[in-house]
Image 1 (tube, rainbow, N blue to C red):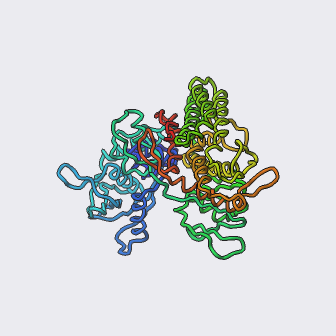
Image 2: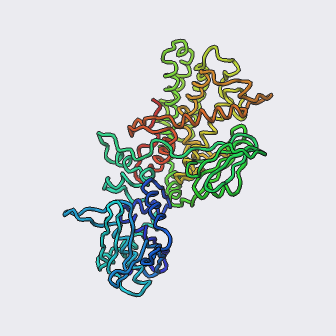
Image 3: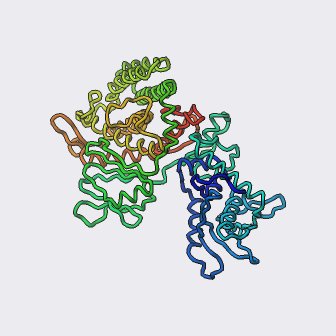
Length: 555
């Protein structure tokens, strides 16, 4: 069967494989261009690399590229052999074959469609009928025959038409009803099928966690002034200024982001390598202000269209802002209550701040505008920062104790460390927003009053207390900071020294790896993953599965 698609962009044959398996998977990969490689994907790539190159025996053609405007398809077939005078396309799969009712090996539906599509392309290219394809399953060491008859030809044509239809849509298809498909899908951390099913049908048991618990890559911070990041093969190499000795050398696949502090530098070649592997690059001033970032990857048009449509609606924006304000204020209140639980004198000293926060918290659900919400949140924040210094040890160096919150610039060491940590959090949240494919400049709570992205500032509110306020207070009380060594004190401001920046980065990155249990989804994951999860849950607010964003709370 010929698909009526002449003039439209060609569809990859591998896309038909994804479409047969799951329409949502197809949409992620082919429309939004989101592709995530897990160990199964890498295993498949390794198999094809092992088999790459010309066939030494000369009995088959390998990696033959084929395309057809008439069929609307293009792709690269693994191999073509001649069997009994007929050309036969072959596909090689790392895994096992499907087993029929009689126990005999069969091709999986998506594999059968894939090899049939290659058969039709080969038929047009060579001008001779192709009646059969074959799939080799290496885990079973078996080869399965796939007929290319009227039924298979019709299926290929219908799938091409469906692929065109989905490409024109800005709406994601629903999560598949076959839960078994999700367990081994590389895009499960993006799709979040189990979390979405939890919204639709609340369950007694904990949903299976398909979202990774810990990050599989690390952030590279370059702090020393004049240090340079360069490229060496598939690695990033860091050297100090005017020195040949390497400070660090990391494979690009192990790097999640590069953060350049102060006057650290990066070469054009290293930037190209980062862009090629979707590694974000961020520039921070010596004082911790976020200057800019490299956001690699294609423009996620469909995702941003949906975001604009949703957040342009005042009702949606207000609902999200209420939940965000509740989460921020409750986290502040719970931290103060928990820290003063066993100290009656401390509790008495901060009681006024606690009551102020509780008063504003009660007003949030009734707020009728984001402007009034910002007022309640601001009043609660003043009570919180007035109480925060009381959580520090009484005999701590007085220079480390703040009197309220000071910013732009910070006027004491505590506020300097607080602001620097918030800058690290800003970078982390921005990286997650970019990775998910949302527009960081279009938020729902903060207004665009500076160069900072409103959506990033919105999402930061969920993590300020747990990711930085608590670790910083704990670190101060463990006497890990030295005023003279870790801070640079000027007449009207205080900055962290290089020693202080390194200390803050270490404290922050270790906190990102701490495990934390989501109170609604009821599974544990690191704070680093929790940030990305929250961004993806926000996106679900306008992709058909609302209800889970900003539900997490400090325990």
